[in-house]
Image 1 (cartoon, rainbow, N blue to C red):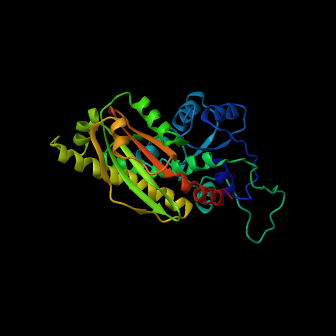
Image 2: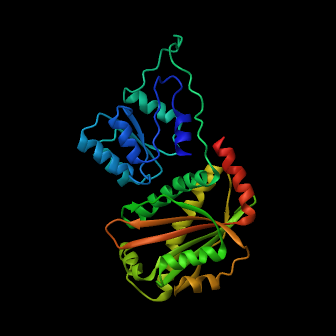
Length: 324
């Protein structure tokens, strides 16, 4: 999805041959073979991320000119990639006009005068990339995740490490078991918030690990207090992360979500107890799972966006419209 959007944003009068890579390791192999004079590089990728690619390019002194195109819009992320040698940073999804101006400013695109006919430039058709619904929703979630992560980074004064989101269709009981397995009996607190818009509805569930809450309070400049003080802190963070992530998704698929007030679903309990407290009214759920990890702190937040099974048809329509 990201590569398809980016190729469509490239100037049609830019006479280049395009090589694609699905992760950083593939990208390095192509660059070593001379197929990456100019590299449009994502940051959040499997196998090898964009930071690692930039480090290897510098270590191997490979002659690649890199423009980072990423959903991770933290100020620190932008500082780091420039320090590693990137020439520019563009937010995803890439705006064609911004991409064009960036290429011109870097001397990578030399447009013909408007009075001169453009000749000798091969026409470039849309990429024949097969993008399934799950991959497309993962990319939409990736962009939204980055915006929420940037807001969290500013609030806590930290750098947030972002994963590749997981997207799966679960029986609710299967989701329960998967969560119970990953949490391994940890004591948790959780904030939930409902949302609905244009026949798309669901709940966002943000899990906090009790052993880490004192560190969260310290980063916020608060003293660890009573359960009610802690609950207020968790609700504040839930509002930040959930609200920003839902807003990012809504903007991309052109939907306006109405959101309920964030509520404390449970405090100092286990996953099994949380699911008993929140007995959902549907059997299946489309789950987007994002785990935010705070660098240099033993701290992470698990965000689940749970769409009702009746939402899938409308969400699929919206995603396919975005892909086309």
